[in-house]
Amino acid sequence: MHYGASLDLRMSDSLEEFVQYLDSLGLSHVEIRQSYLDIRPDPPSHEEFRDVRETYGVTYTLHAPYNDSNAGNLHESLRRATVDGIKETLDTAAAIGAGAVVVHGGGVKRSYPDRVKEYARSQAVKTIREAARHADEVGVPLGVENQRRKETKRYNTSTPAMLASFLEDVDVDSEYLGVTLDVGHAKATGIEPSAFVDEFGDRIVVAHLHDNDGSADDHDPLPEFESVAATVDAPYNVLEMKSKADIEACVRP
Image (cartoon, rainbow, N blue to C red; front, side):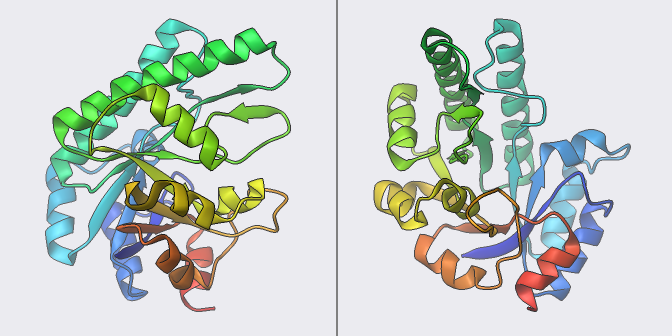
């Protein structure tokens, strides 16, 4: 099991600076969000990724685009752009030796008519099907993440049953199509993470670790992250925090 943290657009560190920081905390895994790479004027090259990996002995996962991106986009050209973005992240993952790519399964406003909601879900199924086939081609696991239940938006993967049904409809028989279990999203939805573990078992390739009070997706520190991760038993375990101070609060409470 590898333990680490997420490097996202809130953080100004270079890749190597962030890895050095994690190393000082005894962590050896980095999940790089595509949005972090997108906004940097000097994103690390594939060679730089590989050099940092070899120098510090870290492992990588990547998070596919989700800012202003929706696997279930109603507009077909924008849906295809989402597919392209996921494929690009998978290609980067393959080039740098990353262990998995995390992806969201899309959502739609609850206020829309049922026919619109079903169309949006079918769009998301197509998106993840195309992405999963590409994951199989490049040999990188794609972990579809459970997203939390919201009053205003229906996500396709909020509960174990919804996620299982979604993956069944994606219908790609590949060892590279898996699950990302976000324990904070599960808690904010009122579901024990163990329910996802019972449903998906070793299909869970990444665990996102953070806390909340059960009412909102706050991404608060989770000092007991190791015991929580042990119940999931995913290969890659990511402290998904909003700041370096929160990462430290997990490791040194």
